[in-house]
Length: 223
Ligand code: ADP
Image (cartoon, rainbow, N blue to C red; front, side, top):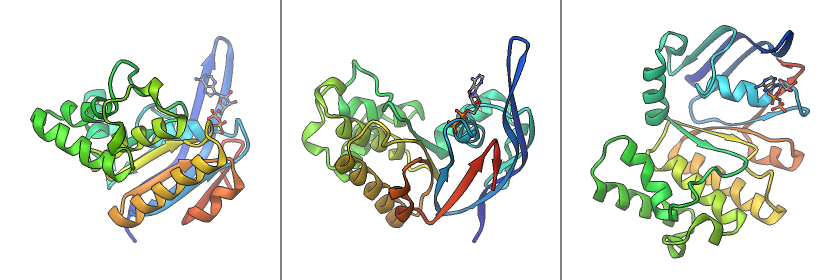
């Protein structure tokens, strides 16, 4: 299996006034193309910090990250933004939908950002919202949707540009067990049908059965 993400000796130190917080202390991991990987570990162990580095939302203090054989540390901020838009999808704990936009508009925003024609954007948005079971909610605003529905909009948004990798930071943290299960099954389905690599942070042991593999983080290091 080809590695889609390779990380070597990753360190991230946050400077808070005079205090250094060592969030990552030498992480080295490989993730294969098409893997559905869970990142697990205690609160404060560095899971989100790691996800931010490999999803290009932050830059490490030191260490090496390659994505699809590209040394992403060499990219400019502008190149990184473009790379993220083209290759990555993101799902966050708090859904992060635009409150003033409808379900359909929240999703079509992403292909629009890639400069695709409006009609194609709407078409792609509606199609993917069908996949996540929200065909009947296209004109709803986020506040008119349940938490589970909002997270499915966020997943549709993460998928609409057909990214190679989806990053999810505790996507079920604010959901009840039925909705959590539905979201995990949706990720599993996406992973199996589209072959997308999925990297997801979780602290729920029940989630393990959905993952191909678990990467355990403790005190800023992988075990
Ligand atoms: P986890 O996701 O496993 O809960 P985090 O990656 O969020 O862990 O945090 C790892 C450590 O880094 C914690 O001690 C946290 O307080 C600290 N930390 C996280 N983000 C910041 C930040 N922006 N500034 C300073 N310290 C941070």
